[in-house]
Image (cartoon, rainbow, N blue to C red; front, side, top):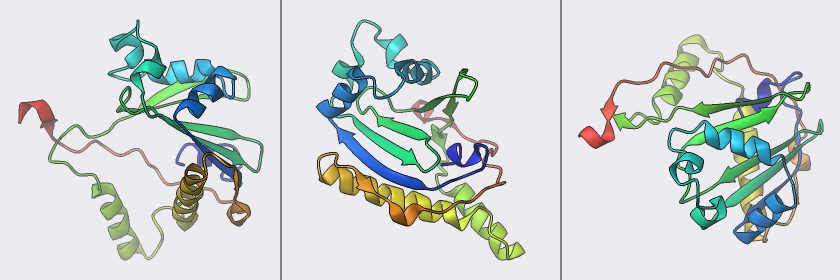
Length: 190
């Protein structure tokens, strides 16, 4: 959400979603549903990438139960979110700019104690209490929850497309999601 809502014009609303699972994910990839080079770019950025860790084993052999979220936005953008359980336990992203350039990044996840998964959520809530102003758009929370609900309905219905007419709203965000990492030491040293 934090990346998609930052594109020119901000969030435009979502038209429909689908959740593909298992073999349907590999068929979609083989059929070229999205740019495979983007997936490879995201995987190469990971610290423990299956491409570098086990280069001779195909990704479909490593990820036994994959899921793919397909999100179609009202402005024509299509986003694909892959969960490659068994092969990937990090968060990577790749996208193509309107000029055609491919860009990728990773999201840092805390791998050390003290574990603080909700620290910045609580800090944002506290800021809202003190200022009386929302720390981030309430629309993001609505969009995220409703998207997950529709995607799980799709998954339950074997990947059927689920229209999301109720997500026909726009918003922009100036919230800075870049936060300093919390302190800690690697989990394997505890």
